Amino acid sequence: MKEIFRLIQRKPNLISLANGDPHFSLYPIRKVVFDVASVAEIDPVASWKAATPTTQSQELISSGDSSCVLPIKTVLGYGHGSGCTEAQQAVTTLTNFYHSPPNHVVTLTLGNSDGISKCFRLLGDPGDHFLADEFSFTSFKIDGGGLVPEELEKILTEWKSGRRRKPHVLYTVPCGQNPTGSNLSIERRKRIYNIAQRFDLIIVEDDPYYFLQYGSAQSQETCHTAPFMASFLSMDTDGRVMRLDSFSKIIAPGMRLGWLTTNPTFHAHLISYIDSSTQFPHAFGQMFIAEILGVHGWQLEGFDRWVRSMRAEYQRRRDLFMNIFTRTVGNTGWASASPPDAGMFVWIRVNVELHSRYRRVCTGKIMDGPQSCTRTNVPQLMQELFERCMDNGLIIMPASIFALKALPEYDGANDRIEDRSNFLRATFAGAEESMEAGLTILADVLDGFFAA
Ligand SMILES: Cc1ncc(COP(=O)(O)O)c(C=O)c1O
Image (cartoon, rainbow, N blue to C red; front, side, top):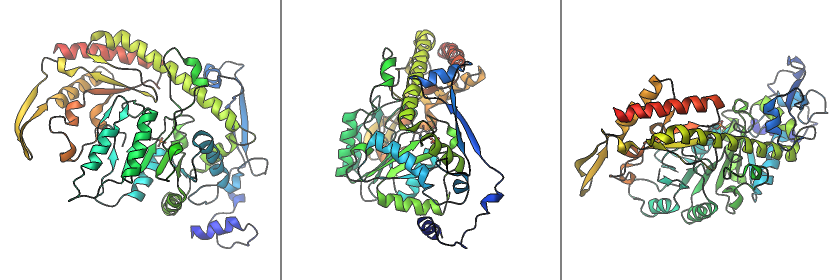
């Protein structure tokens, strides 16, 4: 059915008795006005946030007439999986500007969570295994620099082919990884892409924090000028990268709008899947994006100024968070953290081995080797710490909820992820007052916890 609707769009003069839409004159909406931040200044996020009487805004109107980019009657009707051409073109402009991918097409999504589940459904068969960072938003080892190429290569080389199909998909968050905040360097990206070529892996690049890449604490200014790190998509000569972008972190999560950039074959499959599932990206989100990136809105240049200004604002918050952290939690000596190079999260290491009740226990023989196997009580201690935080009015994310359990043969017997889950994820994207209050509670709780 959607194929027929696509045909109708291509031949606008056809008389259609085919649609199932109500007549557009019956939609009870005449126009939608978006009063948005102005991007006329160098640092538009700072002016917008200051919200003084002189703070500028600009009006974008979506209505029935042709002066807007995406007329209301077009976007409010039933559409098809790829969304309205105007909105699709708007995000294509962004992708081309930031990544210049060869021969790729964009598909609108309802944000990256939606994009991830669509990619996984498209790529996986029951019983398949995908590779992912061991602490992940959605397993193999990662370190402070993110996914470790050698670990990836080792798993693929040593894959025990007897029982299971070798993984053909690598899911990764290259920038400001959630939860660890790690960032993949260019060298690692190149090596991983090279491994993907050798082992014929599809890379699902989930990159909602792409625009939130920072420099050192002294370099606020470079946020406005420094280039963004080259994505996997930008190096994708083979069409093996499926890149997920989202407006959630740079405009608003409730818009539920993102986009997936893939080769044309994946795009065609995605569209037919969307046609029979979510049908059409959110109309108001499409309207907004088409207008804000269009001739009456920010356009590409203004968008770029906005995201760079956003990046400077988050870098300031990160530095503020780290200053408070050093003065409070850091001072206790019970936990430590490094400033992340991207994203919204600080990954706090709890020095749990300093606890008087910390135990490493030898549990005897394991699976197929004679060696003994070490276990710790880190899960129990971290659970106790989490509960103490809650009792004292602080909610903070424990690492255990992000820990992807590996298959037993890849879960190093003396190095289980549960025993390395002595981390907490804290955000610096929230209210600034919460940073001071939350980290002060955490410092007190840690003092009490380590004394007990
Ligand atoms: C790595 C990662 N992927 C995806 C998402 C979800 O993004 P969206 O709001 O676009 O669905 C998040 C957000 O929290 C995230 O951290």
